[in-house]
Length: 454
Image (cartoon, rainbow, N blue to C red; front, top):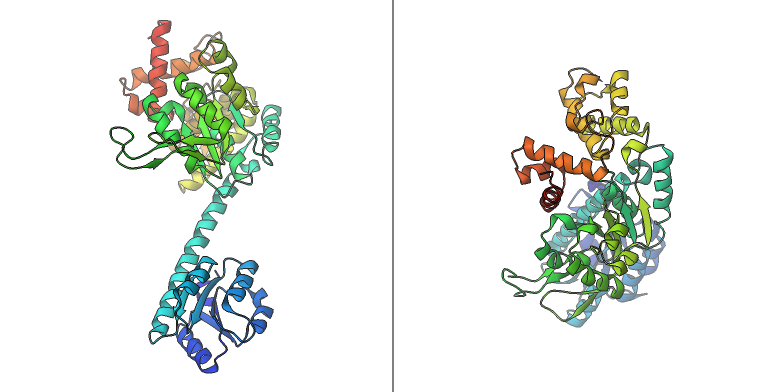
């Protein structure tokens, strides 16, 4: 749709008196630019100018309304076509609407009011569509690979090359890496740079959903399928149809549900809880986990057949500590974003601050770096971020204060342990602070108890 002041409305009407009536009626609104034609041939010669709205008579001397409508829609399906006719046959109106006409108006006494209302509604609808398309394009631009996968280190460049290989196909992708390395960001980058970018990206954090609810979340349910199922609900597979379904923390999926997920992936169909009717879906699957699934298979915690089904195209994201000066590149990016979003003067990093950032281990990876930078911007009083403005997640977790022999999982457990003490076991608050699911925290507490560390 063009600017509001230059909405182009064209009239195709062979009756000279009625042509003038329509032109006069529409021209009463100074925001409309009106052109008139007396036959389809002359109109079609000018169609390259792309009007916003066209009114056409159903019976023209050189073409009927159905044929002209088809030609307009084949040229540009976004042009709104309003058919105006003397005949009031319901089947004709239904057929024209089925073929893409925006409205069908019978030439009666109230035709002027009806026409103006219809044009006004068409403009509102098209403006909404234009706005949605603009927002959609903003999201697509946001996840441009060069803006999303930030860094110059060989480790991240290797990951970027692998990501690029997934864009022109629908192969199942599994993204692995430590917590906070950006697995969901990669999944979104793949989706919004693929042919599915105009369809839904649906993310499910398997670890954040209680086991008894995950099946209904994924596959949906019928009304009355179980206590509390008061309405039919479609699952995430259906919601993502035509687009991408991101299964985050797939390694946390209950073993009893792994077989159902495997069948859904193999057959490309799901069955809602409480139904026997299979529903086909066309959904690309991207999974992610911080676990070593091969080891989980050996332990009997993850199905081997599901493992091979998911391992279509593996992408491993490097931890931040192995990415060298990418820390500073990412820090600058986070400074730019935070300052812009919060409308504060742009800040820079002092040399001492840079050295401090480069010397840290980042058990929380990119997510921790971002939180650290945002806090430093708020704390600092100058336009330059100083070393003493930088406060890491916990001094207890700094490699200088923690044994170098700890594994990444042990670091994660220690983070949760520290937060449990700091926030008096408030699981909901801790989950919010660490940006992970409450179910994940409960599992980690159980793991700590089993190891005798809690």
